[in-house]
Amino acid sequence: MMNGGGFYGGLGAGELLVLLFGVAILIVGVVLIVAWFTRSGGHDHGVGTTPTEADRALTVARERLARGEITKEEYEEIMRVLAP
Image (cartoon, rainbow, N blue to C red; front, side, top):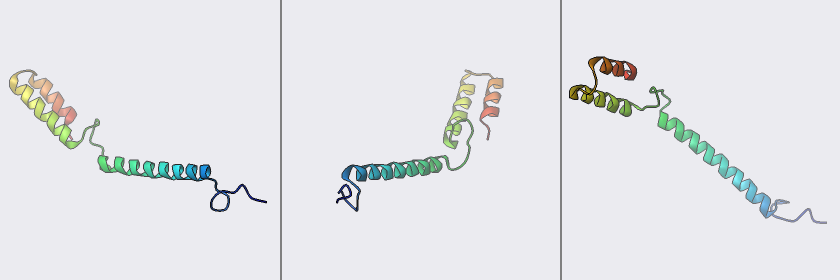
């Protein structure tokens, strides 16, 4: 009597596809986790910003102060918030 037939001692085509799909999901999960850790560098750069974004924000604040769009007090508050 046959044990359901199929490949590799009992795995049918559908079961093999489910197994391969599960392995693919696992691999994608590991890749996403590694990519997330690589992008963040394992460091917390503040409120969701990378160092380049913080530098750009400080540059914009300086430009706005120079144009008179913000006061010195507002600029100092921005510097305090964005300072590392």
